Length: 177
Ligand code: 5GP
Ligand code: MG
Ligand code: MG
Image (cartoon, rainbow, N blue to C red; front, side, top):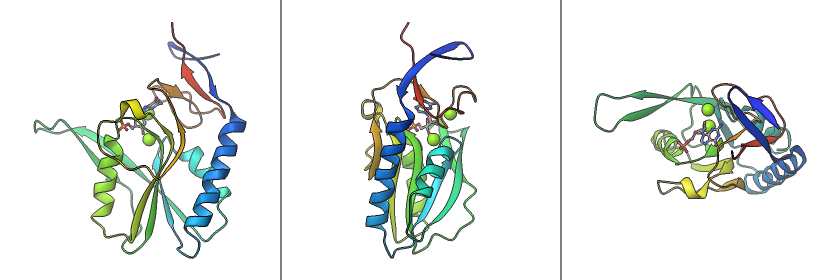
């Protein structure tokens, strides 16, 4: 059990399964992208541990960089607008793999995809460590998924609750009360 602020969490995905799955994902990248010099684009903050471990097991020529997504309230009725920040690399004609910690409604990923696609990369694929199929609200093709999980709040291994709880090597799930 783990207490973060006012909430209690229980172990959900142990480090060993996580690391084994990450090695499998890296093998797929090694196979699918040999000779293509892909650029991994990690989405901060949540993906930083996942990207680090994944990247260590990729043994083809591969670059890595990070973006973050700001969300702010727009004045229009569309509500939240998200903006991709921090991409310094020229991605035109590059093979891009966007790497996320978790896809929930899919809205964040849809926004990132749209903004990156407008820069004419050679290809874009999506990798996410965790995916909640029941929560998905937009059409999204996920190319590499670590684990499909139920629609529950998880934390650890980069994922936070209110900024805290990222610093574990196990993924935890909110305890049912
Ligand atoms: P989406 O736009 O797909 O609904 O949400 C994406 C973002 O919401 C993720 O990148 C993550 O920051 C946050 N998120 C969604 N579900 C969870 C969860 O179960 N735990 C944590 N810690 N963050 C989540
Ligand atoms: Mg994220
Ligand atoms: Mg968060």
